[in-house]
Image (cartoon, rainbow, N blue to C red; front, side, top):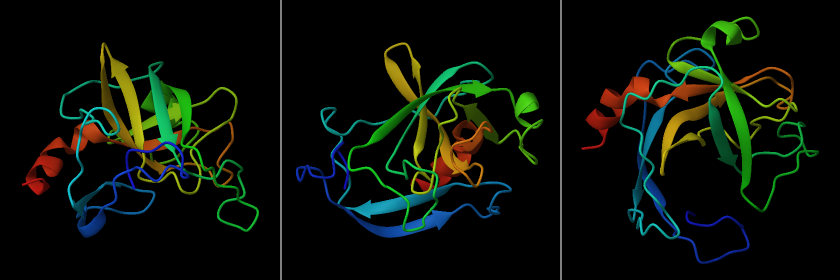
Length: 178
């Protein structure tokens, strides 16, 4: 279901996954956490309910940049246990990025193919947000710069969330988009 912000809204577009391709170098919590999903029918990008996100530029995402995460993940850090609470309204979290150099002081193994972001109030991505977009505004345009990859076990903490850096996979995306 796409094009909705409330799960009670039945006017979104429905599609089925036809096929998916996982990056050939994918290793959980290590690298290349990206996949392509092919759906049928294709989305109608009408600009009203669904918009195309730009991603294919060389925007450098470094520290102290404003970004936003949207997702349907758990709003309490109980993971996927029966205590987890999932929203019925799409959640949005404004973040600030941090340099990979600073991120490596808190999270092991962060590479140049990843972006770190941290909310100063300890909120973060959680179970159910994986694969979701990290976006930034560039003038009037919104660009997808990251994909939710992983964070800490408690979801909300004083440690950053780690995102796959989309700009590092442009060639792979284009090769699998044809």
